[in-house]
Image (cartoon, rainbow, N blue to C red; front, side, top):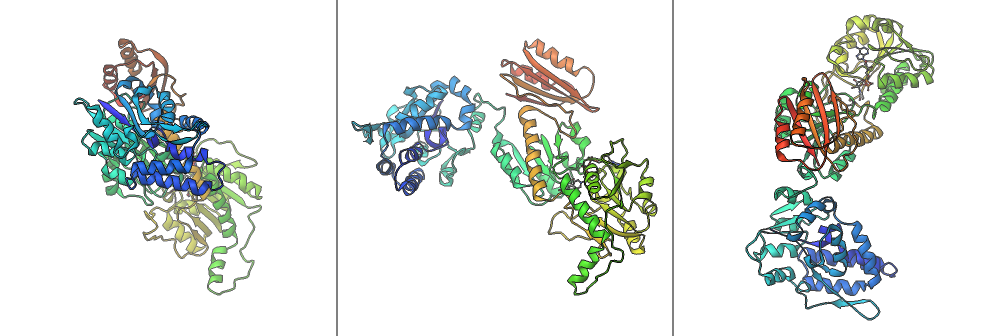
Length: 627
Ligand SMILES: NC(=O)c1ccc[n+]([C@@H]2O[C@H](COP(=O)([O-])OP(=O)(O)OC[C@H]3O[C@@H](n4cnc5c(N)ncnc54)[C@H](O)[C@@H]3O)[C@@H](O)[C@H]2O)c1
Ligand SMILES: O=C(O)CC[C@@H](O)C(=O)O
């Protein structure tokens, strides 16, 4: 096999002559115009719209480089080696004899750069500059075939290669010409650095990185699986920063603004490795049964009650959420709503819009000195406690687990006790099924007459029919509801609720956590967790897998084994490692009630038989190797 690799924008991320122009024209009075012209000519040549020799001549006459500029260029290019080339050094070492760098660029800067990956000068085929006595480039050696149109083709024809497989990797038209002349088995358009649609259209395949080529041809590679084959589906309009992070990691990302219903999800989920959702997408066992490749689910929110966590755990699918990123936003909204409802603002606002003047202090109160009852003293409840106290409220809370009271807040021993005390009841419980209809007609009856109810937790926690009756009867003087038992899948679907049109009731479309700040925080937080899990095996922060925080593996292979939590699995793993004489550099184990997670770092030597046997241990749910 012979692998022919282009240099500019393939081996390196940049075009050598463009960068040389930037360096050489640094002091030139018309620098910007010249640079633009050079880049434009490069592009025309790359797309096959200007003959190669014309493009070369024009650019060199515009740049007029000196030897010292070329020296600086080499240093810059060494920093610009394409990341997928850099990380696959092993391929270059082991397959050195099978690699040729063929470029229409110049040997003076290519040789020292490719030498960084161990490629010898005799494997480089490129042009040569001609210099004057002062060291300025005055032209190039026209006796070299690469200095002419169809140069790469002519070079290969002159070699008269015996019948061997030849693959060309490059980003330009001149690379494709080799295949077009019948001299190569395939032309792979390299897309890690530039996207030339025209060149893609000629290619046998587009390579998002060198990993894809190595994977296709079963050659030694840094990653166990090319990242570009990992598909990420992000639903419900998660913040664009998440798209960017996953794309920068090299994954294929699709981003939809809406949720998908069960049938749509069943059809889509089969090919997806990472799924990002918010609160609308219902990940039921029926949907997850179609998830053949799913490695991780990102809940770009706090709540995970929309996900069948039990099923995910049994299948070894890691679920991550963002437990803190939007809590402040929810708290700010709750505070604002309390103030609005205490002053009867929803009705006064409506009247003013309709041309009616409702100036009156009747039933209008400050929140200062009022009793706030917080149900659920978790991340949101506790933060609300601190802010409400700062505004002069007297804070009471009830939680089913013991919680440290913050500031002067007081713990109630039962929900009933809290309901009987509070002027404002704010619900911040999690979405566990037992909380369904926690606030029903009986609970409302226990509240103070004229109290206010806030629900920014989960829709099913409140019996909305009972709440509507209580507002109509005047038992409660107002309510703010952000979450509903039935919520539309997207902004295009209509919204209906029995609470619509009631006095002093604020209805909001589940936007407690929908601020730019919160969404951007979440968009950064969740992908980072997932990427850490995929790259290192770290499960810290996962809501369903045993939590393990791991160091990066150093000069080791990392074996990740998820299994049903039955006795003896660790012993079986270790006896297989001993049998195959694998040297253990580090081992970590954590279990929960259902599953166990064992991570073993072994030195570089292992064989496929070991991997197959580890995968075959009974009770194995999932097995991965990280290189
Ligand atoms: N409206 C929004 O946009 C929005 C935004 C973020 C979070 N949320 C929701 O807010 C809720 C609270 O979020 P969090 O981050 O504070 O969760 P959390 O898990 O930190 O806290 C929940 C607390 O509720 C307690 N709890 C559960 N059931 C209870 C019960 N029956 N009685 C008393 N206490 C009970 C738990 O022990 C826990 O301390 C969640 O349901 C979350 O999904 C809504
Ligand atoms: O953004 C969402 O869809 C959900 C917000 C909130 O309910 C959460 O659980 O964080």
